[in-house]
Amino acid sequence: MSERAAPYYCPYCGEEDLRPSEEGPGAWECADCNRAFAVKFLGLLAAGFRGGASAPADTSPTHDRSGEEHR
Image 1 (cartoon, rainbow, N blue to C red):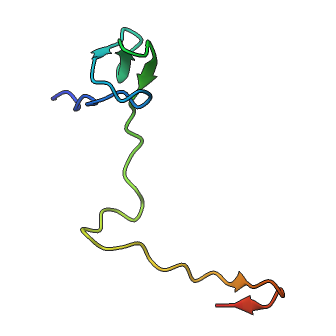
Image 2 (cartoon, helix red, strand yellow; image 1 turned 90 degrees about the vertical axis):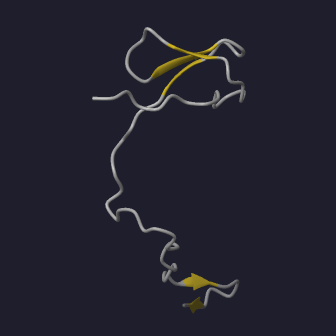
Image 3 (cartoon, rainbow, N blue to C red; image 1 turned 90 degrees about the horizontal axis):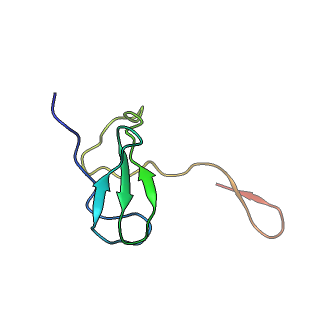
């Protein structure tokens, strides 16, 4: 099994001086801002991948200032 890809930059300061942390799998340390963070894969989305397709339009009703419902 191969290793997962490493993050390219710190999500807090944007610098690239990252090192794996001893805290466990997916844990990283940033030498520039002195923060530690973890990267974790949660799973696939239920809808799956839709190559290039946009999200479906919101069909929930909206209300204007008078309180009247619109679709």
